[in-house]
Image (cartoon, rainbow, N blue to C red; front, top):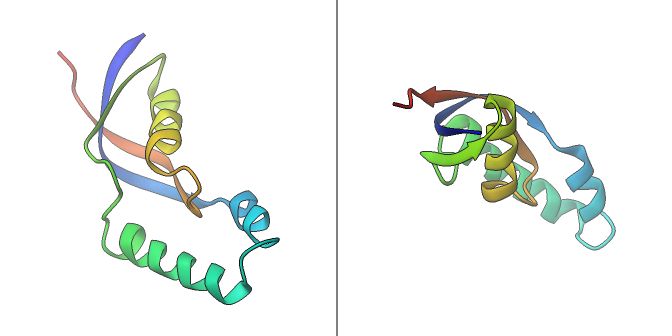
Length: 88
């Protein structure tokens, strides 16, 4: 394992599973408001929570997965690609 520090999110995807899971107990209007707020924060304003994020992982893909699990659990938008700080 190596130490990785994510400094920025460069690619993202919509997690439709989260939306489907919420649709049973949250109104469509509330889902749309949550998605819009999250989109504005993360994508429009590049304000992803928890950055910089440091973890131990086997590779960069695993580090992005660790970030999503720690900082984006239950969110509609998840990181797919990231910029990493060089580790010494």
